[in-house]
Image (cartoon, rainbow, N blue to C red; front, side, top):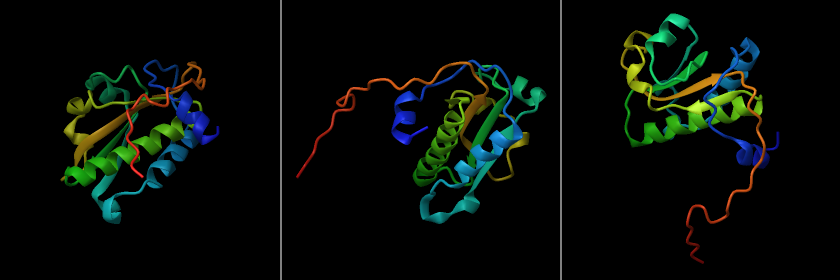
Length: 152
């Protein structure tokens, strides 16, 4: 899908019909790894992929997603939170480019079992993912939806 078309078609998907393939997961993770992070401190971030049904059942507000990807950071300061958001955005766009359903998920962060997080890391973002039958159709978005001031 072309980038601008994808941006106009993307949407939060909360109904999933099946699990990702291993190939789809690897493509999505590669997109996350392509994200820029502040000061190039990639060692301060972790991606944790949760597909274990027993762990997923312990989590709340994940819409019965078959996959949750958690973005965790060592030090959740302003720069790390922005970088985590960019990583999650890359993951989400890659998923939708593959025709998969995805949803940014902050509501379920508190329910992530601490046992899945590496020592010293805090979960700051998560994404629910799965197969979907929901269509992705580009829509008209008002150019002034976000009020803008241009200074020349």
